[in-house]
Picture 1 (cartoon, rainbow, N blue to C red):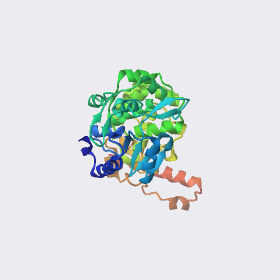
Picture 2 (cartoon, helix red, strand yellow):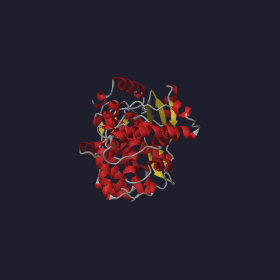
Picture 3 (cartoon, rainbow, N blue to C red):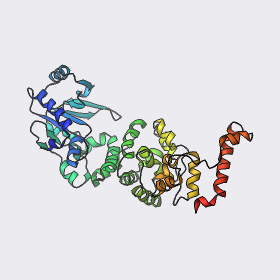
Length: 374
């Protein structure tokens, strides 16, 4: 069975659910991203199970008796051993915003799966039999590496799905099917809060195929919609190539995307993060980060290292930078040369002038010791 591809720990947890539900139903399914990732042989982090043939009161009773914690009572969702269990539901848009939906229970697998965003996320695996249910050609979309919507009307009702498609394209390296893409272009994001937009973009920041995500953001006009920034085609070509060739350090991975795109297109990455109300660590990471187009000389590398070790500089993604910095001893440490703060203070400088004079002396030493850069 496909479920056998799960880790032993997850299989034991699912078996516990099987034993728990066996007296009450034979229709309970793995759903959503876990099924997609099983077929892609990706790591499974979250397990969601939909439970059929049990009414709401009985379901609540079973969950409470077994110590499950309610995590979405209006959506009939409980958590048991890191697994989310829920009753199947259908949704109807009733207002403005990502959460403005009425929710009703259904006992029809096809209708329950219809509410999913994309066909690759709508497949279901019966945890009792291992049977795969695929009403919307999800297996085919995975095999052909494309992202396609299920229901046009319900898709249009949830504008967040535009951003979800983009981040999925960047994470999986998938194309967005043409009809889905054309519909996405017509959807406004004005009903989404800034934190909700940023939460979705964070998934893109950590994705493997940033160049693909970037191209879709550009083609969908998302830089204009989010930041009123219009990118020109020459910059788009350069950014795409830069993202393809970049070698990222994991600790800085969330910050590179805006740093590269904004700077190469003549915009301010700090303002982009600020406009989306990004957490403070993004603002700290991006603030006062120098950017260089093209080749970076040895002297420029040392100048950067006066203020921060190269391991903390977001421009370190370029080929050869890390190796050169390590050779010069400025990857883990800032560059000081022979200048000391104590000497600057001894020479009569005070307060803010100490830092300025220290930097001036280090720069002067760099420019006079050309032998470092041969």
